[in-house]
Image (cartoon, rainbow, N blue to C red):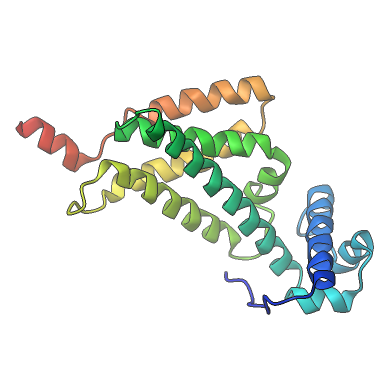
Length: 207
């Protein structure tokens, strides 16, 4: 499911209206869920008009997807910063770097637990569950690539295992209080850190 493209050049007033609509949509979706939310509720909370909503977005689903894109961008920034910081501190082990990236992703979900629940609850636009899995798989592939030499093929089995584990892990950590969620995130990422691509295992065994 793809977002409807909208013009990106807006006036300061238009940008403020768009931001207000997104904040209102997040509030309404968290309160009543996506399926039960109505456009009229969103514009009422935003103090905007229905016309202004459809000027900036294609409808309720487009609002939801815009919120997800913003969340995903913040998550990507968190994981990128965690890996850069680790490398700056001298960390070079690819397993450990993937571990650090996964932990940063999970802790970002804990930090934004209400927003995370919105996207991982199963209450989204038609086709969103598939898009969520696809995006998480692409994110995982970038991190699993830390294992891989440039000429090595993708280990599809490892990619499926890690992305599937992360999908379940997110749903579990956001159910817990902060301390327990952090402990579970540590346990999960430590366990993920023990996984190795099969090509790497064969190479190691041969040596």
